Length: 261
Image (cartoon, rainbow, N blue to C red):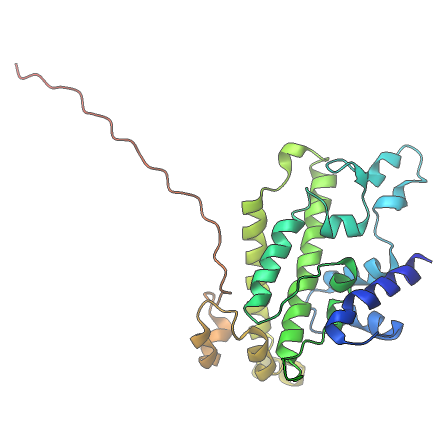
């Protein structure tokens, strides 16, 4: 029953991007797409559609563990939807603002952040004003949204399990920002490396598709013309800056008076 409800929510959530209702088989296939690089991310989406993650109602019928069904920070039932779109301790607010910022560089206006549109991100079908499909935009949306959702889930698990819900150990916004940026830059670099036909031959991602995916989002978009340089250059970064600490200003102390004797 939960799976059926989730499939309906995903279908409705992604309808605004595809323009049509998707079949259940397409939804299941979208959680196993090759363009989602991380296998753990694919498993996360598949389990989310099945509603089998260990949160919320999973704990309600386990003696002595019923308290785990509620979010200790928000004092409400801790469903996956709550973790991804509502929770104050999961870092989701910072993550989705950054995701929207990156997608806007690609002219993707994703305002309706919902459980369905997140889990069904592999079905995105963005088009220009004249109705032309944008495979690069679709691919970027899937890559970034799926990775961001899994990142939020990992932040929540670290806080709930490793830090034992210690409110003093909630990851601050600056750290959430910088870790997300590091993750996206890692995805970007791996995407360029996987397009190397010399090493991966037929399994390599088409270089033209990789260019379409990341064009407009790089710190220096002129780098796209230097294809061989891009593949192994560690300085290829998306156009969002990390939050840096302010340098400490040392106060000058007046030297002691020296009396000439």
